[in-house]
Length: 329
Image 1 (cartoon, rainbow, N blue to C red):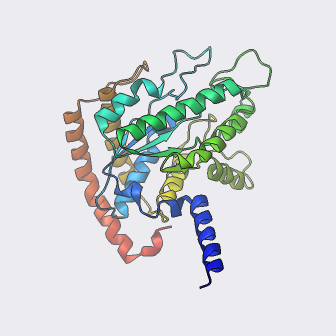
Image 2: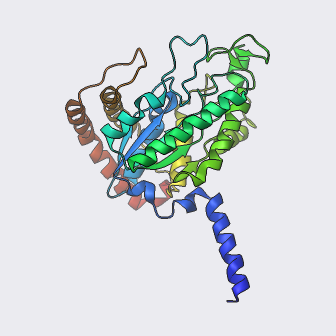
Image 3: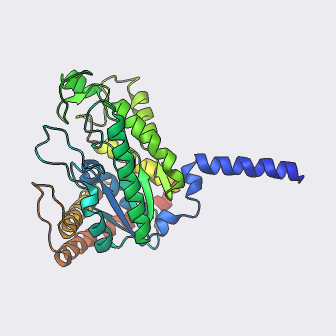
């Protein structure tokens, strides 16, 4: 091959690697992790997408299977900002990040912040700067711990259900809050997401949740104008969590989705909740109203009991899949 054509081929390959997160994960680094720590706000706290990722990895026979630890905290952001009418100061990940890294000792951190960082107000350069600084500190601390870092952009804010309910406020209103949101708040989230994508050279991977989820809504609303995966505009339902899980898994090189039975879903969610509450209590936080988790040893025993019920179901599902591989999508 002539040198000129070799150069062209190399440039095309490099460009595709930068644009395609699946190619960027070609070495499989997320799935080679020993322990993956998920950090984020109430969307991560809900935990469904984390449980779905774990279930898909187990059904795909990932070996060795990484330990997934969900330490998402409701109301949290990375700026320390709070809207005036929030019932308590929003927790800031930087209050507990050092403890989380020390207690969990992850070799991979997955973090999703942004939805609460604009505090539901119109765009402000000052708040945007706070967000950039908060993400920057997060990157520095995770790197200093020796862990790798995957950033997830926030998913879109869905104004449609709130507009129908009359819970949106126009520009120029005296104040805004999570229950009285600026009508174009999604534009703020989109700007935050677009900036986060540009930070891919500073971390191991950025996964864009905003774009594919917004595209998913747009397509679904062609048939059903009232379709939403976030009935309150922010918090995803199960379909929304599945969309997040699918996007993350594809970025990690897992292209097919294996069907999961209702009984398997119930068990994996039970296990995840026990461990999630335990880790939140162990790490510590300043958010009021949170249920105390079991001590680590008790939580692990409880999780093992639940997992003992789950293992045979996973084994049977994998055996069935080998007989009918077309079931995976």
